[in-house]
Length: 398
Image (cartoon, rainbow, N blue to C red; front, side, top):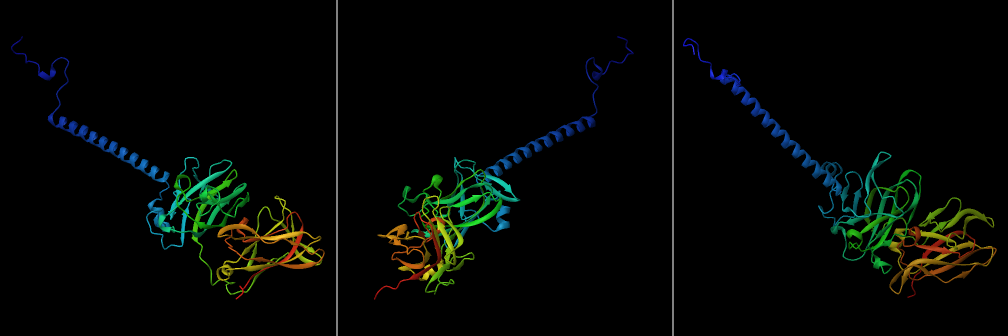
């Protein structure tokens, strides 16, 4: 080696990079460290967001209302309020579901799905021959003994079918009353309109004896069945109603029906029509799908609340021949309910307008007949004509 030649620097050794300055190395360390921290923070945020979304989806799947929805509507979830003094509880089947004393019960076989119909949030029942939606009533709303409830149901009439409610009741009829059916069973026509109807549920028990511990369920047939809202109201007597102090209530049948405390009921087995017979406007009744002709009548609640006890029904009629007919009424039979308790059968006076009176010694009048009627005229397999029906209380002999 030439003594005048400088030895090579260590950094210039074959196969090695030139050494960077201390300042340059420090900048590189800071850049890499900062990038690693930023990446770690981003990963933590991603994990937290995914966990939050999973919790939210689980909450909505169980039907629990979002806090924002509760604040905007003023409703509370079932189990979070005391409904012991409330006369009304409800559930709105929106997305999410809003519960105020009524809970949507998830059944393994009948799961409702959120939908939007005509701009309205609702739930669709499963598409099958007979579909159900199950509900549970808040324990604080229930009574220890039997009580009467009215259910108001808002639904979309999407296709032809039928709709009614089955509820846990004090009844000796099938299943010990676990699936007692409401007297009213709606006929869905496919009008493509939002509608609301009221169903009576007398002698409610509500001991969670239905599927999945439910208290009642909506039963429906049809290709499309949509529910929006269900409201339960305690059925309170109406002593101050318009017919509370009346000595009689009546209905006059003609093209324009005049109801004065009695209302004409409607059901598929009641085939009736306005007409004229022997010079008088009236309603004709002919045999329906069951082979008998029926005329259903509903009694005003205020009259029933203040005029309990025995009564009589006067029927003004015209019969072309001496046909037989009778009254079948919602009554008592040896302390047991009898929705179609029968009176004696009368043979009509033929060829003239006449009036017959039928005694109803044990009326109950809980709207337990078809279409929530209190009594009906049965013409058997005959065609007859009716002009006026009057209900009067009968004073017991001293």
